Length: 232
Ligand SMILES: [Zn+2]
Image (cartoon, rainbow, N blue to C red):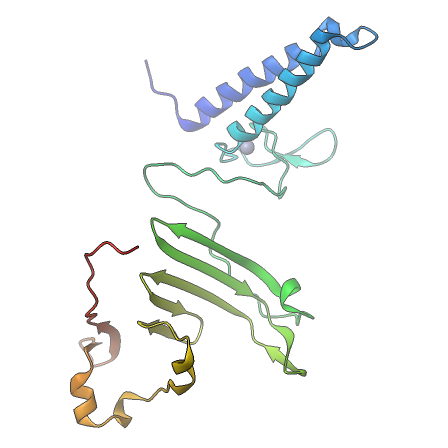
């Protein structure tokens, strides 16, 4: 027998579920006047089937797009999800590529009154022990120490792995090997590479990559931390 595609399987399972829901909803015990033990149980079964619908619907990729229903809303003809309706859950395949959301960038046109309204994405995931955070915001107004300032639109991606953080935004890529915290935080400083004396340069475990035309292409930092030990 031919193996069903994901679309065929989801559609078949949802149709079965909808038939069950119809059977329960049309049961004569519900039409009778007054409450009975049976009607209460049928109501409970209907609720549970609704829960199954919610979770089965998460497998639907809305393969046929959205169509206008009799009520005038755009909905998926397979699972019945209304277009752009918020979903409380995500479903990811155990094997293979996992995808959450899509690449979002600020449009950078309008100025928003505060960060809350300017936020497009603010989400984080802990993935097998590595922490990933994505923040996308439109330009907005903010106040620091009572002074109103304008914050430019940006997309900031941060990856943290065993105390090392990599920060990528639209103007810089920042790698931090030691967390900037505690009393020492104020004494931190930065310098361009050419400003450092050769003696200091020799102590830096940094390799600079260049392409065939001599253009800066990458940076490699040799970390002296024990990489293979289990850390709590
Ligand atoms: Zn669907």
